[in-house]
Image (cartoon, rainbow, N blue to C red; front, side, top):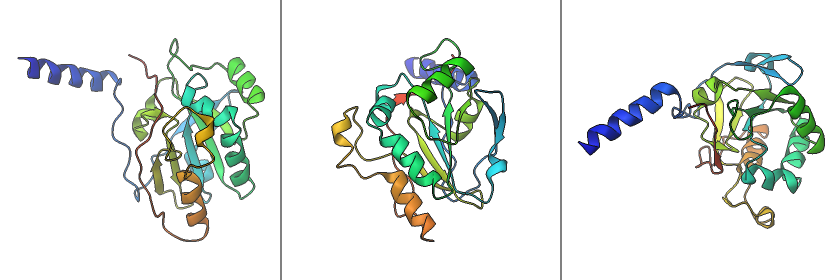
Length: 203
């Protein structure tokens, strides 16, 4: 009886969207999407075909996210690859009323105070894009090549902690994947286990 109840509960969570699907497989086409930014401008993945694109799931209240921003690590990475022509899309899938949900006003304040260097911060408050990508954590990272194929999916690095002191000795998986791809090499570690806060989808 307990097993049946668990199955029914899990099925209902999937149906309600509270559980994200599995992420697309590395090597397959990255699903297209269209989202708006803090100023109401629309951005679709298709707009950036022909460029490398990083997708970063974002929640400003998550201590794992704060670790990488308070230290300047994320901004440094964003700027480094912007200078190399990489598009960086930060995506907030927190639903209204949930931790990390942003409005145009609060998003503008966050991007300014945190000195974010991503190409733009996008709103996914219905969670459709996050669930399509199977985004489970903040940060959950994806790298897409100029042909529109997913070449990396998983954690930002190999130190699943909230301590900024761990950044210096960490292997940054996103940096490694981008450097290899920009050199024409396949990612040596294309899939890792993401870590961080759970994405705050609607119930």
